[in-house]
Length: 257
Image (cartoon, rainbow, N blue to C red; front, side, top):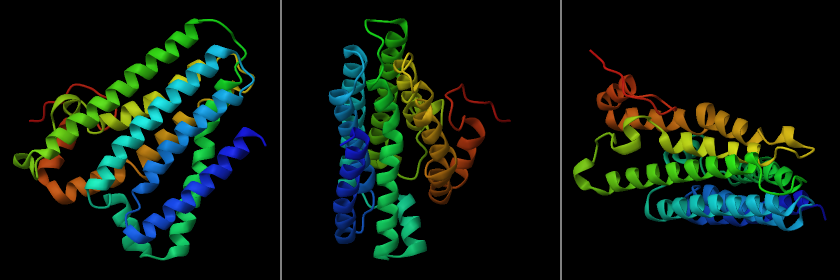
């Protein structure tokens, strides 16, 4: 069986199981946890079965797995301890608890698992051996991106855990320079595989992860939903934060008269 087909079958099986969990818990946030761990599994599978040189395969297996496990574990802790994410509460308000519609959504996520994993597969086919400038750059971008995302997640979690901050806007650390630093670093991370894939025959596929993630965060499931929820819960304080702070790319706050 081709490794991409194996990832597709694994994603369908896991998403079916998680759909059942959603039916019992009425918390669709587990789909994000499953997706993250599936991506880690895909990176490892492609690294083990790829036809490329040893270093690119090692890099994509280790880095892809580390990213997926970190993200999945962070999300699992949040989903386990908090109410259903606002994005999914909004969806539930539109489609209710209709099993067929939720199943279609979970199967869509299985499809996205395959699409997002394609850059991993391309890197695992890279025939370029030895330590190259592209490989070093790819690892460097990965380290910066995943560290930045982890720091942003930790800063927000610490802020939200303090009862004194209830109803306030998080502007500590990286959140002073971007309204969504975690999203920015998540998007940046996908460029690691563009660099690691240089030299592969199917290299032109590697930007797919960055394109899909950027579109999702900017227009579909990321910023629009989070900002709408923040405006509902924090009102004018969040509007002021919007006026002063970059939405995505970290930059110095603007002075608002």
